[in-house]
Image (cartoon, rainbow, N blue to C red; front, side):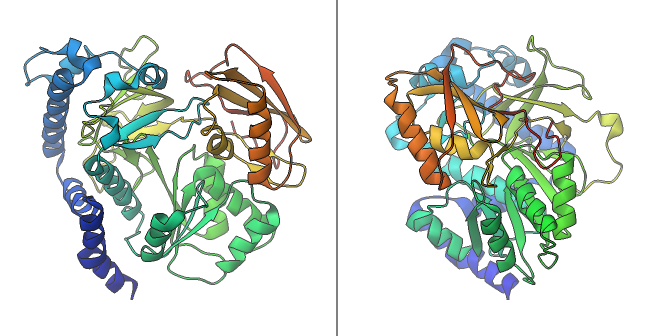
Length: 449
């Protein structure tokens, strides 16, 4: 029944939705399925062509990049790319208009999760949005998922609204807010899945870990999933082990950004396939020189099909390592190059005295609505309270702190004791990204570092 319904979705319901919304999700999904079957030479050629087209367009149509026009011949777009500067979220935020090729009124804003404590925004048109959604769906399909297959999804937008609620209905999605829930609420979610078959599980890595932890601690053994798909924050080895143990399934990690770059994902290997026709990935040292494959460096990514607001050599603050080609497995399903390891964000968890668990996205989902706070960091030294360091932004007034406390209390269902501390800077981690949560207390006996 599920496979039949999936065919109806792809042939009727989703195309009608695309026509109604002016999007192109289903055609892009079919396109990317085809791209994933290309051989190595075909993928290299396509990536090179896409990079060249992007650089020609950006240097002609985007104010910030016009100074880099007239680069090398199209036969060597990689050398041309190296003449472009490495930029980060702070640079974009300084004057967003310099990076746009179209009026922002005609575009769709995508706000970054703010897991660095700095809120960012990238603009896309509907086609670019459809491409990002299609590549993400392809990632999910690598785990055995297909559109219409029942899935339990955890996330940070529990108020779904009419459009998202309709999407959840058609795509058989059971959506839960796993951030800020207590043990009884998480247990209730799990018990609803008791003895259910043919379900996938998907969500932020840390939220899936919390579900698995509660399942094991409460001996809930009749919740099983066909596979778990993770995104959004770091999939630590002990996260993966506990999720697999609790739900008797394999875990497939994906790596992307809210800014619309779907960078890499797992399929048949422990390594990650890099989606080279969609992104050009550089791993650089602190001086912006490429590090040898097998060495850890800074992630710098260029989205090759984002023209409304080109992300060229964007440093997202993560660390990663490419797999040396002499270590590539002899047998692999796809011809994409491989990423060996994603260091990512060292996301920690805040534990409240009432037994609730707060991860980074609980806080970023609140602070994104307060532009008066330029940057923040949550510190927990004891379970009875937290400290929040903050850098005041434009229009800041002390009343903002009270409003944030009220928002936290409303979302959490209880009040936290918060010590606020205004600072001029927030010390970054080794990746160059400020660590948004730093905990000095033991959380369920396991280190998250």
